[in-house]
Length: 335
Ligand code: AHG
Ligand code: MN
Ligand code: MN
Image 1 (cartoon, rainbow, N blue to C red):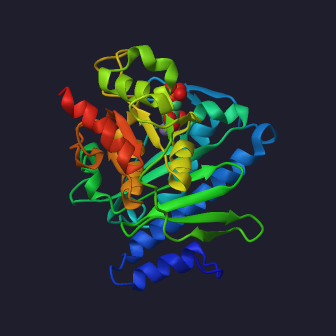
Image 2 (cartoon, rainbow, N blue to C red):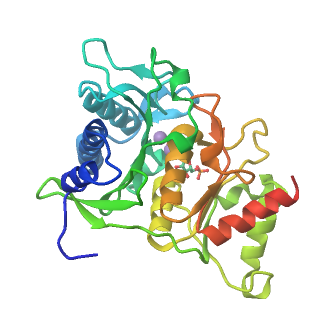
């Protein structure tokens, strides 16, 4: 890319003027989410000094213990977004039901879904965490949970922010994937990648290996073949990474390729997987596809799944095209 760096604001204004023309309301929405992420980053960085570590003493609708930062990040996103006039409603991992924009504020055209703090188990150990978000168009009428149950293909924007050694915002409005890095001195988001592409091939996989004994046979077969390395059917050695924050694992794949999997397993056979479709798998799938990668649940494209519940879970395999195709093929063989 050229050496002249542009800001998020300039990028969005250019997108608004450009051929495909993103609407002004969507531009405002993205600016507001980016501002909220900046505020979350400030809280994350304070750590013990800001009393933001540890648990909040509550559980979310999924029965997970909430960390203080889960709650803080959720509040920051709500407060930033409820008054701007760009949203009709919001839904979050940390709220049982969707939240309509209060009557005292104008109602906009969009629906925002988010995982306010992804990788919560990393907070207290000072390892990368993030925020994931997805934007849908409200189809009209009163806003209810059902308004959000649109397939991933209906997303008009998706993104994530990584709170790591650098704070980075990765974004798509359906025209490729761009990355911004937070310039803390200026307080602004500066574009540092203008067209992220995921390599088609990789030698790196990400999966929680401790669940191996619970996996279905296609996943076991795929990983066994990776582990067999040069001497096995794949004829090459693989490396493994697992950050335990999807946002950080996906960011690595955006940067240098790889495959990430959180498949269905036998621990809770009635659950389709661990990750949530609406605010984890769908936005990440949109980003991955826009960067030339693939995202499936083993049998179908994640973005084509018709959701039936706000907090629905899904099996996830995403990243470098050729690897995701192989493991998806193994699932289809035993269907
Ligand atoms: P969250 O912190 O939002 O609940 O998400 C955590 C998810 C995901 O980010 C990560 O890939 C996975 O859980 C880690 O699971 P394990 O604890 O099995 O490693
Ligand atoms: Mn998460
Ligand atoms: Mn979370």
